[in-house]
Image 1 (tube, rainbow, N blue to C red):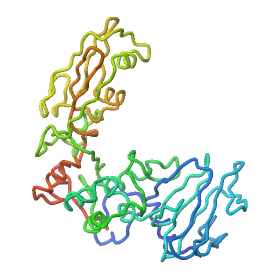
Image 2: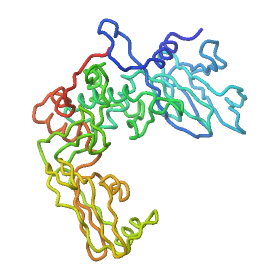
Image 3: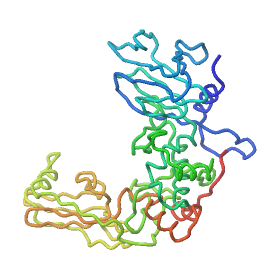
Image 4: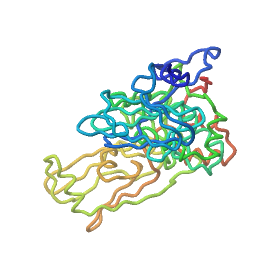
Length: 383
């Protein structure tokens, strides 16, 4: 017989959240499946307390029970799964702890349960309830020492992002990855009291716009003004509008690129460029746009004139090519270098984490912060 918790989690895994259900029916909590690692040849599992049960089919009896203190060694060899040396014909395993314990994957503990998928190597997936997932996310996305109102704003944004982006990695066998491509997640090893309390205080609270969960993007620091979605994605999203910060020109940075590297990169893909003669880009003023800058001051495009041709690149292209922190920058040439100087860090969409800290330190509540960064949204208690 499948354990009630496991049956509950599998039920939640099938749920799709598009429109908020009524408050009276929202007593459940959804689940997230997180890809911990992919393409590995071996994984070792143990528990913090109690035994763990290994299932090929959760509707049937476990194929193996490992007592407390024991280790489960799962390997991929010659395209087959081996569990503690025993060959398994299937391509999927579920490892469930007792209710009093947690599974440790290569000695790192995780809430929920673990699934192992036979793909190109082993894919390790943590199936975890959303609130438990956030315990391992928020302290990796925002410093736990920050003002609790900022931490609560981050908790709501992270919860909303997770629910909106479920199935993002469905082709790989899970909902979200554990990196910054989705949200950084390190399980129980990351948990801190302050961030756990922030998650608990906002339990089930999710951001909506006109009845649908929003894509609650966030970034490290806007540099003084966040960005509107059309200037990053090319399409307008009503709740991702440009808003001003309490401070401007925050987190200044500089990047120096050798002239030879710069010219080489501009000549890639068969573009004739030669030696750099001139850079055409209007001066940066945070909050002031132009033909080549968005209203926030971020670079839309910059033109580089060489001895053999000219190249026009978007701010996003330049950021990617030269690993720049943001697109809020100036650029100038020296004798042997090209120097980028700018402000902020990240794409500039949605909540600015350092801006949220500043607002919280000035006495704003987490709801004030969220309403500042996400235009026209509501906060609903989903469960």
